[in-house]
Length: 185
Picture 1 (cartoon, rainbow, N blue to C red):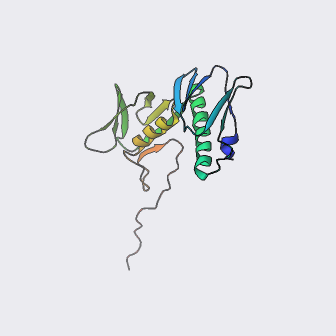
Picture 2: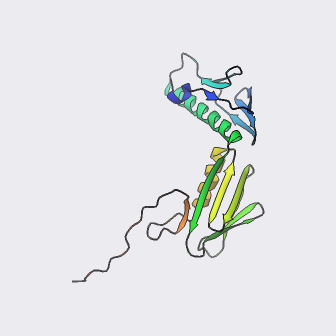
Picture 3: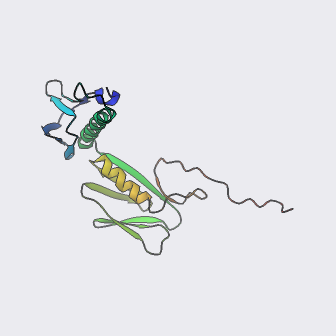
């Protein structure tokens, strides 16, 4: 059995789980989220113990079913965490004149290009710019938060010589030494 798939998911107080064929509707204090899952995986809710249990058919020990078992359990756990705590990615913009601004449903990022790059903020995400060099992406869906943060970072990845660019808050950039001008013999 999958090690991750074996772990039951604890349902916190204030979270309601409704199972449909191939889908779990999870609602909590921060909102509502519908998580689809593979139909071969069996998902059950134990109301008495407040647990979500994912399992696979007993005679199905293929590698694909083992992988799907762990995947479904992880997706459901992320959905429960999303409606209770939410997910957040913080980005830091480093470089002279580099900044970000919110303009309605768009975030405008100036990172040394001729024109600032504008990205539309997807539905279900909340983007904040507490300082011109800091961007915070928040939301219920872990995949959507991570993908949008990655698309912001992809505009100008940090370069290894001066560290200029867009990086995650705790990301460590391996720096390279610049040119060394030694004695030219």
